[in-house]
Image 1: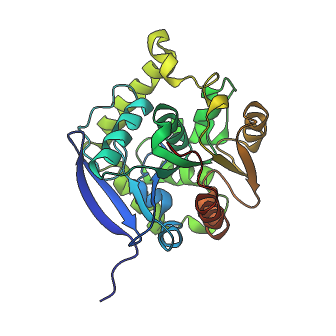
Image 2: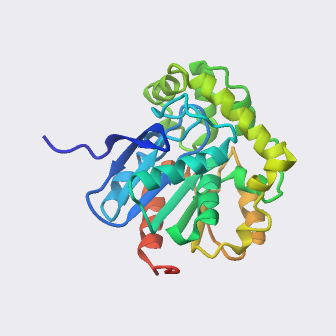
Length: 291
């Protein structure tokens, strides 16, 4: 029997029983950080591009703290997405990953960027996909979108989960009953709802408490990031409109931007062949700063 394309694994990372999926059997390490919608995980976020990436790299997609995937729901996330950064640090340390390439989508893009800002000597390349969280951290308004409305209205039902998915992807043929049920089952597993509630409270503290917001804000640090970075954005994004990307492009002259046609907030799911090829070419290119 052939080995599955994605392999399910667990590791203790900073005392947290952490689930992740991996692909590839050799090559430079690539770590993928999923977004913050209920039902998301490493596999749900990146299963469409991991096999292609695995032909060139050793790829890891962990389930973050905060009620995502199969990572321990009791793991603390008192500082919201910043807790995910600390968990990512523990995860890469547990697997002895260094000089890695890092990618993230949505909230996960903020996590990846913050990790690169805190540990630039450990990151060779950074690849970001459509992030309203980064836009907010850069001082832009991401308060009223169809996607955010669906997210705020999520009540733990499969009907509400379908509405969330409809704002995340452009190609609606992807939204099968099986996909809805998979995300719904993940979002409603024991402890997940309580973990998300704690995570949301942590995000509120991170973004609103003056003593913590300095950890969230990127206005003065992201424009100075020296890690080679590419940012892609779906032109049909209903969660974080493409105009946010175009505004960010003007604020981040050190970062290369690409806009993906016929793609929504999860452009790598709408256009997996194109986005995975962009990632492979970018990660395989010039090596970036060496320390």
